[in-house]
Image 1 (cartoon, one colour):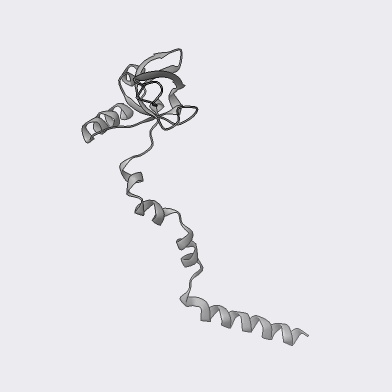
Image 2 (cartoon, one colour):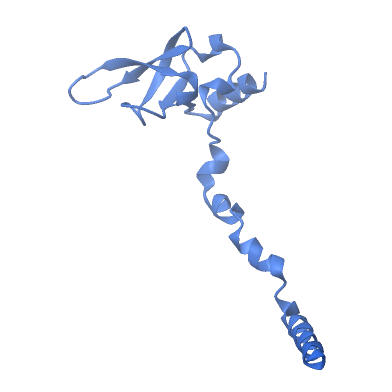
Length: 130
């Protein structure tokens, strides 16, 4: 019996050497979430920043934001004021019934910062880093 066991270990060791061309970490690499996000150019250009990324609440006013939760999810608007931690956002032309504007209140972390141009983005980045 002992002899048989020896033979067995020798066999597996040999098989392992044979599989050296496919190191284990190679298969792991393909499951890494990196390649898909690289292909998605949008993520590199637009890091998702919520309003909370800007420390100074005074700088929230007139920022362009996208609502990320609730009834008006996905709508874009402009911050008009903040009251007791609630951020008031003016949404433009939000639907056909209420032509014009509507105001909603959201928590800052429910509002995603958006920008129309690099200039605006740079301004936001400066605010975020201060």
